[in-house]
Image 1: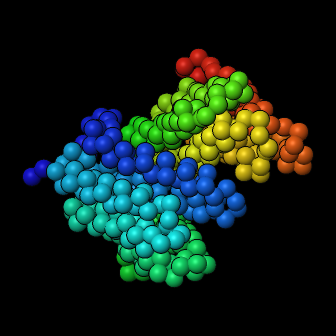
Image 2: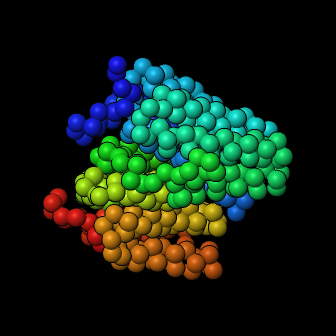
Image 3: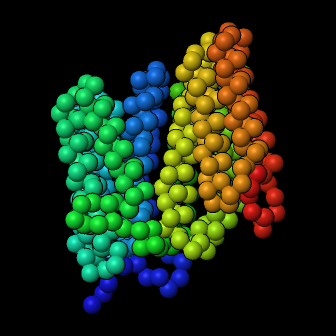
Length: 388
């Protein structure tokens, strides 16, 4: 009898069905960046953050699932296909998730999360990991009620209940999904293939960077007047994306994968390094993409609060997230990244105090210089481990 578990006879590789599954999240990332662009106020940013956390959580649970279970097993292939359908529906509802499509979004998210956990809990019921998935299923059933209740409530009630639902889901792994009568799981039971987990998260960062490149190209293509400032902003935005890619992928991504794979408790380190620490990294790339679009569309125009927070805040968030990632995996405080974050934040505060003095393209140039400097400073022989 064939097992549904993924073979552990070597480093697991990402297979085509996983890459196919990721296509849904290309669309989801695009929806999120457009949503933030259209609602640049505090309320819009908070709602976009909430939805980003939900989208990330859905994708991350799929990643943990395929780390344990063989995605090429017929049951898992069908499950991933069904998850794609639910994920596509969820992504389609994102722009109006706090409006007429609230129930649509909540129902799609619930079907995706609960449906996957139910299939896995049944399929792996005789395997050691089955206990953890039964606990996950129990927690997601409880949070599903809160998601649906929030969608039905609307208004402030929707926000409060959806925040509560997310908190429940994000806190659950830290206490081992403890449930009355069902007990709890420990990270020792969550032994993962570190190389596979790292590769999956690297791919998601690449998807987010792809959105940044796409936005940059489309904004230039749709511009009515290609001035020198517009072309300059386009070039600077591209260089910022290259610097982000360089910083993440040059050496630390590979070294982190090796460190996680060699850890005594791979489940615990993988949870901290990838499930949680990658959230600001991905969010930073998405926010920076919005800033790129604003800078290219209006390179010499007035600087709004939204422009400052996206053009400088996106790279700052990315650098802060990468600093946390480095701290979790390698230990120590990555001083170079912290200094860069401070430079971006302080510059942003100064510009907000006198917004008429600096055009958006100048902010974009500063962001590119800061991220590029950190990336170049971090470039070492490929055998070195990143800690700065």
